[in-house]
Image (tube, rainbow, N blue to C red):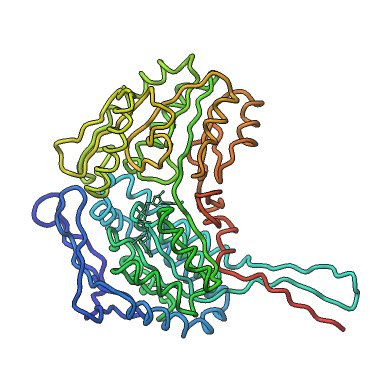
Length: 495
Ligand code: NAD
């Protein structure tokens, strides 16, 4: 396939459809390639169901080619002078900013969230290239004073080798960016497998990385037969780290298969975040923060509030405020002006969310708003608030990953903390209170990877992010984000 050196999205056929004008192929060893077979798959616009791209379907053969290309360049890439590596990563950040608008439109097209939110997602993706471009200069290692004065002992951080990265569809550019920027900064070449539902932003990233001047083979993108690609990540000896973001079920499979090969695995899995509002909280602040957290990406964010726990004395007030605000969000196509919530990613996602709400209704809970599919199209589901939910309902136990907010009330702080911790999906938790004592207690006792006290968005490129228990292993972002891609090697000299 001939390279087309442009990344453009032209309005076509009316106001919302976009004509894609950039490479739609696999990116292996610096070349745009088709698959070995003629097999293809299609990408759909979740708002309309229209096919927006037809892509080659890679399997084992293409994955091996991509891993081999990455492995072949590893020895060179890890020796690239650190300033040169930093400049390349910073150049990608700059290019992402330069192409912010087409990238944001592309994200709306393949993922569905409203345009303004997509623009912020693009900025977020760029921030990781900037952060890790800066961090690559600070991979210091350390010297350890040894009891034997003849010995000089130090720890050196060195890149592990080829990184196999697997990302989900809910943040089509930012999710790959977090992993790719960290791996490249650490000195690891990358094979990225984005979600087949949203592979176009990853292809755009490949194009930007090509423009930035990275050597061929350092960054590769493949997609198609996910299990076949995952199997090669596990089995090919050159892959030394597998970094996966997605569901617990798939994460578990990869983790157990990789154990056979003794590979380093990093997992960013789902959450079941409690959002606690204590009786003394600033209600205005708490409810507006909850609204902004829950409205984002139609609730399809791993850190979003999955359960609201509210003190019984203020429960009526909080419910009323949320029905008036969350329940009134404008739902529609992400390209339409003033839309605050887009579609869900797929029909199956709507079926699942609807099933959770129906199930809890059948068990006796009360739907305060929403709860019925919208006429807008098969992927649209309204902001929904549910209360009086029996403790055993799946709605409280599972990650919803959609625009549904279950509410539970509590009487004592102990009860709130116990309910909050009653999950093994421990990615993030939020608590609102004006009491210093309660705030400190929440920080101490909420056993989650991220705890936000009076803060709904504590995560940025500078901060280490990840879960505990069944929410995963490893951290993305922060200086910790490099660790999954490096070995701490002990080097000793004796005189
Ligand atoms: P998923 O596990 O179905 O898919 C994730 C990725 O894995 C996709 O690229 C998919 O193609 C790939 N995949 C599927 N089967 C595979 C296999 N057998 N081998 C290798 N790869 C395979 O998850 P999803 O539905 O795309 O994403 C939603 C989930 O991701 C939610 O649970 C959400 O909480 C989680 N998530 C977590 C974070 C985090 O940072 N912790 C961020 C976003 C999403």
